[in-house]
Length: 448
Image (cartoon, rainbow, N blue to C red; front, side):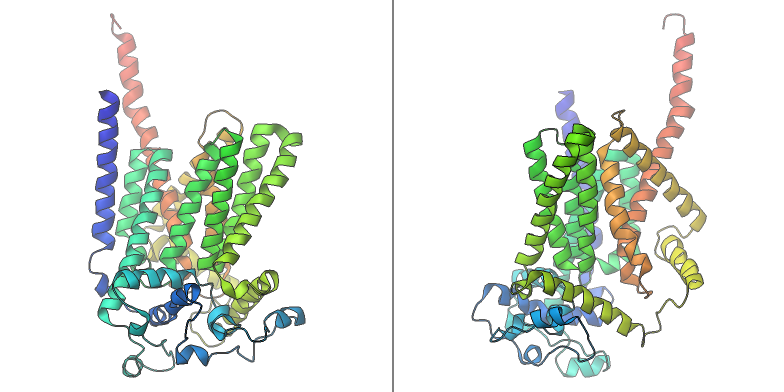
């Protein structure tokens, strides 16, 4: 009875948190501040039809796009971009080079569920024209279409929030879990970016999915099942990369966790052999998944993948020449980034408090990971959180642009760190202030 009652309470808790997330992220989706990139993402969701329909007929605005003449690449990459008689929709041009297509598929699913076909799509946004000019030329999506797509993004945001809540709750206790809920629903930054029809919500969703699979991999003691979890991690990593290229950074976390898991169980000599073999499996699954969802890569996956990274680097350098959001120097970076992360994009705008709780959270995560590695207790969830946070949250802080959406990963994992820090400190305070005095009083009781 006690076990069933405890399970019932746990299910009730999950349902309450899920309802809070749905009520927060599903509320007034149509009022989310508009961004012109949403128009481009929705317009290019026609790639959802192109992926499944061999007889796909591309819209006129798509057929007119090519590669910017200023973009340069090594000859072996340039040659791989030229495929005679290839369909233009999957040929090398701006829309296939600027981002992988999985976000476009996700948006296509959202609009199809809302009853909107390809014929209902808008044209892509022209950032050199004003809002009303874009609307006049058909670049503004219909209200219902925009709502349907944003609803899909909100749903993915809820699933991401639930995954992180369950991991934090399981790792650091109820106080930490509920703190994360408050931070996730109270963040104006997350409510804005995770509900727009852009790539942030799918990226976070597949990141959280991979994180959950990583925890399952580290917890699994049977080798066969552990290898299955590792392969599924590869699928999640490949899908995250197919949303946005920086999602592939989780491949480094996957290799690191594979090494930790194998060396911990098998020792250094036997573990090295398994580490090399299992890492190869993980990377092959990641590469296969990343490739299979993007027909642009089919003619030459290695060279065309390099082209994606080269084009993205070139595009960012080009953006720094005509945008006011450039971070001009190291001094500016050391001022801007801490302010964004600890003041501007937080729920509590107290940098010292946020910084102290974050450091506490990192300490507890690191200590628990070390204890788990030494087989002295600990929790592998902390290690998975640290590994994924390092490879996802740190690289965006090195970009030359101070664009708000680039801070998605850091904001999310700082929220996790703050929640863990506060939760663990509350547990320590409870033990020191209440449990220990109660134990001492009981020991002094004559019949104890």
